[in-house]
Every structure is written in C-alpha cells, then in structure tokens.
Amino acid sequence: GFRLYVVTDRQQTAGRPLAEVIAAAARGGTQRTELREKDLSARELYDLGARLQEVLSPHRVPLLINDRLDVALALNADGVHLAGHSLPTRTARRVLGPDKLLGVSTHSLDAARQAAEDGADFVVFGPVFATPSKLAYGPPQGLPQLAAVVREVPIPVLGIGGITPANLLQVRQTGAHGVAMIRAVLAAPDPCGATQELCRLLAE
Image (cartoon, rainbow, N blue to C red; front, side):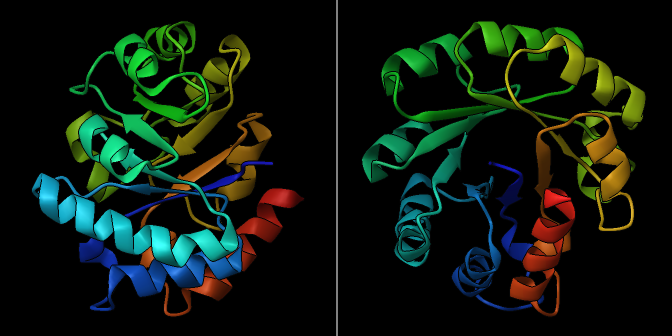
C-alpha cells in the first residue's frame, strides 16, 4: 500500500544534492514523492523534476509535482499535489484526466471532504504536531482531529507535520493511511536506512 510520501525541500538535505537523497529514499522504500520547491521558476522545476524522474523510475516510485499543473503536464509526471492557493481540485482533475494521481493538502475536515468530492485520490492533513515548516498553517491540529478526518473522508488520509519515528505509532492508531515526511527522510544522515525504518514501522 501507499504509506510513505516523501516531500522535497532541498534546503533540508544537509548540503547533499536533492536527487541523491531522493534516490536513497527510493531504495529504502518510499512509495510516492512530491516535488515541492516553491521558490523555483517553471524551468528550474522542470529540470529538477526530470532529474528526479530519472532516479525514481528504476524504483517505480511515482512523482507528483506540487501546485504546478503546467510543469506536471510538461514532464508527464505521475500526478499533481494541490495546496490551498492552487487551482481548484475539480479543474485539476479535469485537466489531468482520470488516471493521474491527485493529492490535496488540507487543514480542516471540510476542506478534506471537499477534496474527496472534487476528485482527489488522497489528502494530506496537518500539521498533526508542532513543526517549524508548518508554522504558517496555524497551531497543530492534533491526533483527535486527524482521526476525525480519517473517519469522515472516503479516500486515503496521510498525516503531515512534526511526525517522527517516535510518534509514528500514535499517528497510525488514528487509522491514517500513512504519513508525509520531509525532514525525517531528507535530513537523515542515512536517508535509505531512515526510509527503511519508517516503512518497517508503517507496516506494523
């Protein structure tokens, strides 16, 4: 199943090339990867996406592009991941067709419900715990709120935000399908080993 979703942030790789870290995570068992580099131009994102496709394809790991439907189409990527400021979910689904993956980041139960209704394949909900990268999205939602979303939304729900191997079990106990992670994988001294360990914990 789809349990571990690795989200990129090239500032978090401890100085290593992003493609190298993403390749190591793919060897370790990542099931999907989201290219999320908000500051890049379309061209830079396209070039980086093509590089990631190269390292992911031997492992058959799908690549989704955050926000940029145009770049995803240009790359013929496996899908798109939408956020609050992105194109409407329904519009993206229409443009992508039925076979591409469509993920949506949500910060409320209503938004998660709506995403499912509008054609998303899965939602990422958070922040579950306090985390520096998610401060802009308000206070942590907590485990009970994640559990409510899992209960009410008919598509897979992944938690994001401050999730570590130490609290992963609590996240799994909400019934969440899986987790989306940035630092726990990208900043790890051994991204392949870290990913293997996360996959082991998620499979329990």
